[in-house]
Image 1 (cartoon, rainbow, N blue to C red):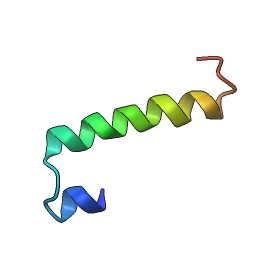
Image 2: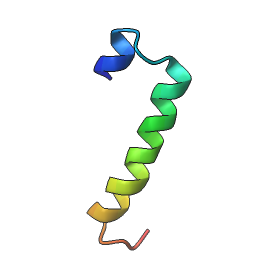
Image 3: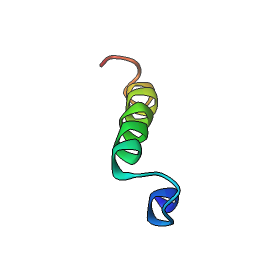
Image 4: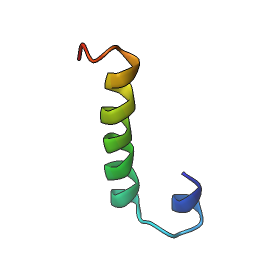
Length: 34
């Protein structure tokens, strides 16, 4: 979010990275029962 706000990455890159993080940490947070 900070990098997107400062212009380091564009909106597409921001959302792509966000979805990757949700995949990795969201699944781990649910005990891998996704």
